[in-house]
Image 1: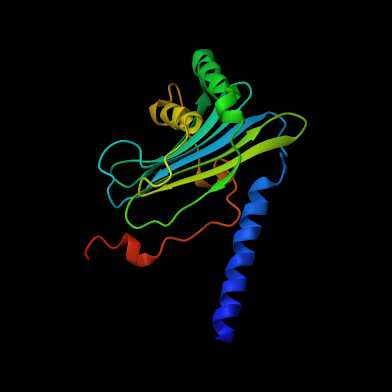
Image 2 (image 1 turned 45 degrees about the horizontal axis):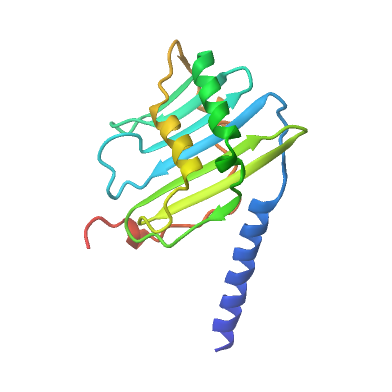
Length: 190
């Protein structure tokens, strides 16, 4: 009985810590950074489209993107996006429906999931952090996140060049404490 109570207290402390981490004001070390974004769709039911990507964008439109391709390879590209695409992204990030969001939204993954993480620079070295997990359709993305995810999935680099894995450390948002998906949940053969 004592071991069970100790486990429950440990879990409660971890959950409170994760919640506090997402509420912290993040101080960006890169003043030119507009934001870092990631989107991931579980492999359990993924068939077509984007499964996983990370994108870092500077205020001038310079970007680095990493995404998984159909053949399992990871594509790493960098370049400068057209002004129209950059303007669309800035409009989505400045929308009140997106700016009002905060925190960490999780869930229990049984089979399918989509996740979105972002670190958006909000000036004066501060950033908005957002983690959203839609586990089995139980917590759908809010409208603001859905629009940004749609933009991310449709973004097509042009005039881009590849970069090395060693240069990819700052492309994805920092994750802090991440919840793990049990190995049984990823088992395609029940």
